[in-house]
Amino acid sequence: MNLEAFILGSGGMMPLPNRHLTSVLLRREGELFLFDCGEGTQVSLRRLNLRWKKISAIFISHTHADHVTGLPGMLMLSSQVDRDDPLYIFGPPRIAEYIETSRRVLDMYINYRIVVTEITQSGVVYEGADFRIRAFFLRHTKPCVGYTLEEDARPGEFHPDRADALGVVRGPLWSKLQNGETVLTPDGREVHPRDVLGPARQGRKFSFVTDTLAFPEIADDVAGSDFFVCEGMFEKALEDTAREKKHMTAVQAARIARSANVKRLALIHYSPRYTEPELKRILEEARAVFPETVLSRDRAVFPLEYVD
Image (cartoon, rainbow, N blue to C red; front, top):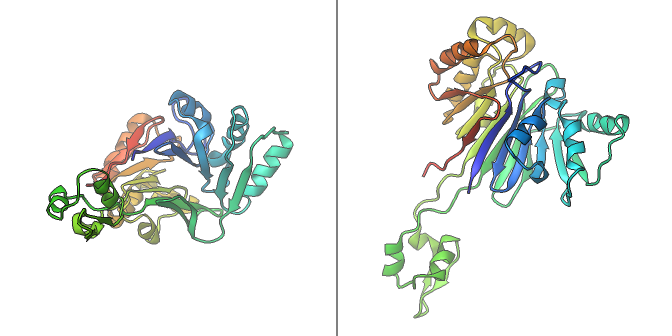
């Protein structure tokens, strides 16, 4: 099952010619999940040829303008296509007020159902048959939440030699065993999935954290992530500025990634003060702490692969 992260915007505070405001889209097979919706989100969606009609849910970290200014346009855009399914929107308190005020003032035509949920405590906010999306609180100048998408464990590796030895006829019965069903051999003996499968294999995990002070508990929430998108707004020399503004440096993000034992860190939400060459210096600072760090770039695509 494919799982891909698309960086729609990587900047913070204000959009730049080649750097839209923060937004990340996660595609899991045909289902799309949007994390934050900064200015320019629609542009990147179009350039990446992503089908916004397929967005099932939008997850907003907080209601500062650089994370939500793209949302009214997205809601109106979705009215231009046939949509039968509701759109779910999650965010901290006042996200419902922002959406309702935008709809009223802009006189939006909305031809589908919008379901808004305000997050007041950490926990699972959205789930499918084999995954869940969890919210947890961060520490910013106003209520702010991070998110993780975590898949269920997958069945263990199928061993054909064991199935043959137990007399299971090759074909549909093998598929049933791989899907966790008990089957009968031609002579009436039961064969259980545990008889032919190896240990369960870990699912994948995606985490999204932006606009927060660095604090140790973040590592607990994002632990083991295959792909950890985290703000790296400032260079190490501006750690005092980051603390004052309740933001994070790239080095602090790297320390969290190291403590959380994530597989890869993607920095995001850069201060507009940094040019492209300066971002490379910030990357070097982070890699000195956590080598598996990359810079998010607008319209970059990152596949999340199974470990085994």
